Length: 96
Image 1 (cartoon, one colour):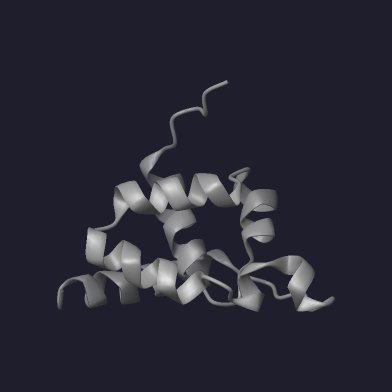
Image 2: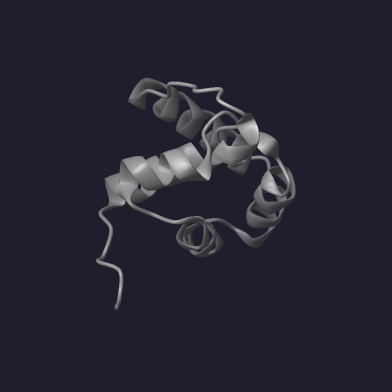
């Protein structure tokens, strides 16, 4: 079964959520229906290789990216937070 094509807005939101330290892969799955492997593939295709490696290093083993390791901590994430992170990511990309 193939995944449906994602809109540009959905891809942008998924990238912003994936970069956020306090948003777990499970929360992304609940919100967007994308699993952790889906997010990894999306990030690999959307980011420059150096940005992807930086992101993977950042999220690998990070407790906050896995809901079951958070032990009951629920963090709310809004679209405004995603937009702020998206703006910060664009700023960082200009320096690479």
